[in-house]
Length: 540
Image 1 (cartoon, helix red, strand yellow):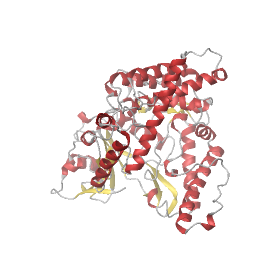
Image 2 (image 1 turned 120 degrees about the horizontal axis):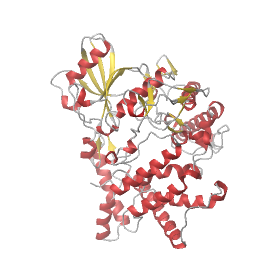
Image 3 (image 1 turned 135 degrees about the horizontal axis):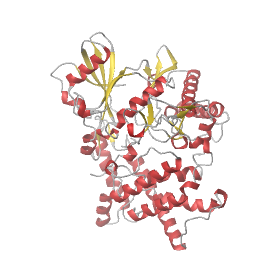
Image 4 (image 1 turned 90 degrees about the vertical axis):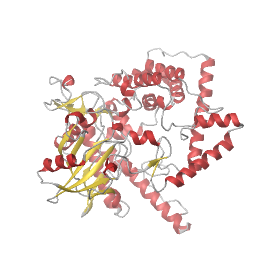
């Protein structure tokens, strides 16, 4: 974690505590800053923290580098002890429920599953009912150092040991199967959804476990609240079956499209411009309604991957802490906000700390160095070795999953299958994925006889099919345009246009120049230039 603000005396800009101070945005900056502003009273926060661990006072405050959704402070007490204060931004999710669920989830992971998760010392999910005037979680400072600090210097054997521990943590998560789909809460926070008569989860041995402490409640996932979705009257669970869950996602997209069909952040491609794919409310609704007609039949074939489980979806090296004396030993994992018990197949992915830019090996065998390795120059050899190590760890992760977590392995291997893709793409229709969904539905029709004996419920005319195919080609063209734009400008440090303060002016110039080059290439006249400027998502 990087220290970005040190509050040592009253002359410091205390207003910086409330604002986002870890970067800037190249577009929509006012909106982005507004959804990350939290008004708090520093003296009250320090009193709450000192009281939570029995210290007399706080003597130092560090504002830790911010992520997308929270403000985090490291507080040092007069007795030397340290505590972390985490305050969710307005964009973190549903007020009260996001914090209440995070605390209950941490408790469950730490004290039921015995995972290495920091202890919560005190918390409040009701901003209007506490003296701080903001939601907060006070937790022990995670021991150890972030994996980022040592990953490039530790030996391959140590990396394998870390990988094995991650696989074991994922094994325990996958083996804990919940009876419903939705976030975990304390029963006292969601009394309307408590059901002490039913079991909460199946443990690793398959035994039903009831709980007087925890319950599955309505979702707090951002996809059900972002971009004014929180104002919509939609089904937010909890859901008893996977079909109910998948249907709720599609109907959420339908309701959102009706409210505002334009995705407000970075879409997958450059659409809406001259001679490009033109998204519309009608197209989105048509694709989603067609999906709903086949949804119960096209879930992934492996029903074991339908299980409702908790999963850490952002396991990058900044969220993993290791022992500085023995960096091959994981001592903690942080950032469990907005977790929900959801279908395994929708959550699993290769852990982010194993991510790399490069080709994925075709099989799980030993990854060879290229035949011409010995004749490469030293710089190329260095890059080739780095890719080789990353590919080897990638394969080893999958092999370990196959050995110890077979259902996770099967879910990962099935991610490129038709039934997986047609189940996850409906949740992306707001981002203009409807042509891809239509293409998948046409593929489903071709495979329908192998899926079920029920008659295929969709009937497209030849003209409708040709129109969909043409729109699919335009959609792919828009995706290529976006990729080319990003490659050309080289200024996108973050998916929503966020850059560091130091890079802002240079990135602003690069973006403006990139827009001009794009218009020179794509706009045939002044009218098309105006149309593109209206369509480009990164032009305010």
